[in-house]
Length: 254
Length: 223
Image (cartoon, each protein chain N blue to C red):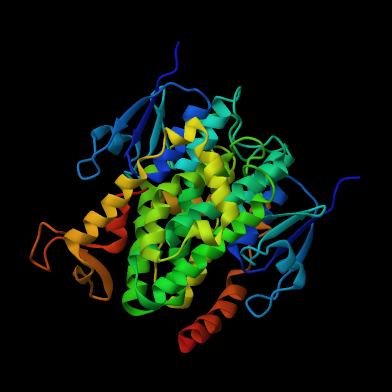
């Protein structure tokens, strides 16, 4: 019986891109289902009742949630081609450590670097660049974190490329100038069809952010009861329809 | 001769205790090095974990592994007796999901510990949300442990609920894991603590209260 693979996803999500790359690397045919995050499908809510988030990989009716977990699942099931994790347990532990590092650091810091001001922004930007530099050290002289081919760290990290131009513009720094080795790694990844075809258009991602900031304006970001909140453009009433900054950003992410 | 196994940890850390549980469940001999945290970090710790500079760190031969659940998976893959993960990929994915959930929600109880007022209330809500999710979704109505008949990696990941929750509840004067509100989770904590490898490797409740009470006071005084 042929495998039935469905991916519940949202086009700008770097977490969804991770799975698109992995599925492409392994040549797995799947059905892509775009989710409207403001109107989540019953399938999504049923498949991920705990987080109600994308991406979700559904394999023969069974749902696997959380992108890094789904990457490992894909690697274990379709183990005949393009391994994402090494065979040796120690090297596997190192790959998992760095994939975990990407999850803990890159996403949050990058987001902070372009949605905060003043000292908080400076601290986030500095830490973000330090993280990129740590990753450069880990990469060393290898073409990819996975060695000669893409590994789980490459697949976890490269989707953020679409957001790097946003981080750079609003964070006011240049990855190309400050981390040329990292920049070279990005370019090598982009030469892979599985990556270039899975990434959303960088200009479209940039447009999302510009559009949001234009619609809302930085003065619509304020504190309310000690929390940073963003007012939805649709509502002019400050007490009506507000979200925390995290909830706002999470509309575009896992 | 097998490579030496060393564990850098602290006696009251739920994270280094997770690693001890995994080593004990698999019967792996190891040397334990107590770090003098939070006061100072040894040169060896900084050498073996330059990125996060934290315990636990497992050093196998001269190979360091950091982050407690990464270490537990390494132990699982290196020593194959008494498996902590199911063998089928879907079962493994489900286990890893709950491990990640445990990791993502672990900080909340420590925020209850280190804050007061509004911040503490917010953290308390997160803890209760977490307990509710486990109660409703983790399948404890159908099995004794998260791992089924025997404890597995998810039980290890949630282990701090079984001892550290009680300690923090006493230190801050708040009940969070109410038995009538979370009967399944509560029953699990008792089953978990009954397992010999766990029972013999749980930091003492009173000793931890005696340590954490003044520690909380000093944290609040300096903030």
